[in-house]
Image: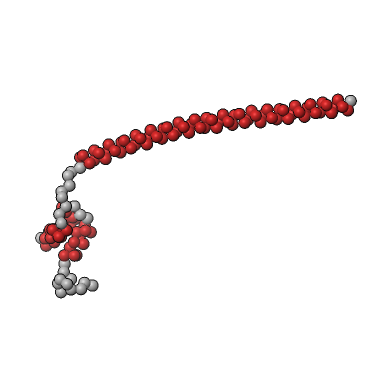
Length: 130
C-alpha cells in the first residue's frame, strides 16, 4: 500500500506540474498574440504618420509658393548713404519717424539710428566721439 500511495501522489504531482505548465503556456501564447497585434498597430500608426507628414509638407509648400507668387515685388535696395540722406531730409521736413520707417521699409529703431548717426557730434569730421 505504501508504494501505491506514493505512486498516486507522484502521479498527482506530475499532473499538477503538467497543469501549471499548460496554464503558463496558455498565458504565454496570449501575451505573444498581444505583442503581434501591437506590432501591427505600430506599423499602421507609422504609415498614418508618414501620410500626414507628406500631406503637411505638400500643403506648406503650396502655401509658400502662393505667398511668393502673390507677394509684391521688392524694390531694389538703395545704398546706405542715399537712405541716410532721404531719412535726414524727411526728418528736417518734420515727418514722423513711423511714416519714414514705413516708406523706407525699415523699423523705427533703424530710422532713429540713421538720424543719430547723421547728427554731427563734436567739432565735425575727424573729431573724437564720446
